[in-house]
Image 1 (spheres, rainbow, N blue to C red):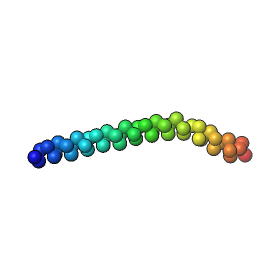
Image 2: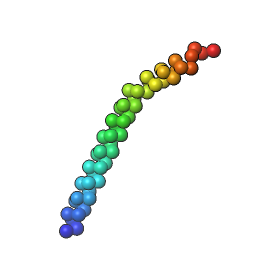
Image 3: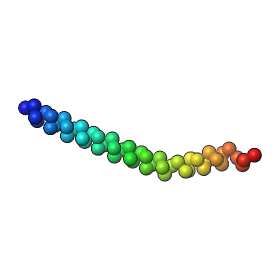
Length: 50
């Protein structure tokens, strides 16, 4: 019984680890796409350099 519990716990841990890794990369990829747009909007809002 103990080995089944360990196997299920280990597989659930690996699934959760995979999900966290996957969504971290998705969020990072989305941030890399949005970052230049936001920085350009902020630069335009500040106006021309003095």
